[in-house]
Image (cartoon, rainbow, N blue to C red; front, side):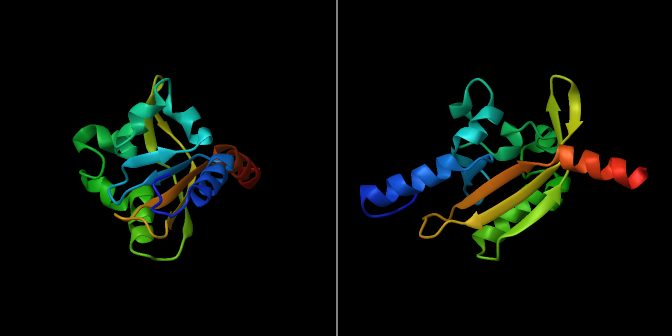
Length: 150
């Protein structure tokens, strides 16, 4: 991780905690560029996960909006739950869990995904960085919708 800390023990402890998270977690900068990721996130990044480093999340995840003008550059990006959660965290606002359904491109075409997004400011990082956790809740949404329509 990119923490500015004293002592190897502290750095190793944070690394162990970060890597133990069962959800995909990323360290991102204020422009949502991926600076680091945990093993759960590595599974989402494909065959060359290290190629995600220093790239914006929308480009890495093949967001439909990022494909047009670049992540953070198109009009719909102003309402992006991921980008706005990271911006709030960098400003020091309270950690919040937000639901979003971005549209991503994959081999099947455009696919909506259901995510809970959590972003928290990482203490004592310079420049400021945030912990970004993306939780896939598609199955939960599917069950909820099937019970609601029954």
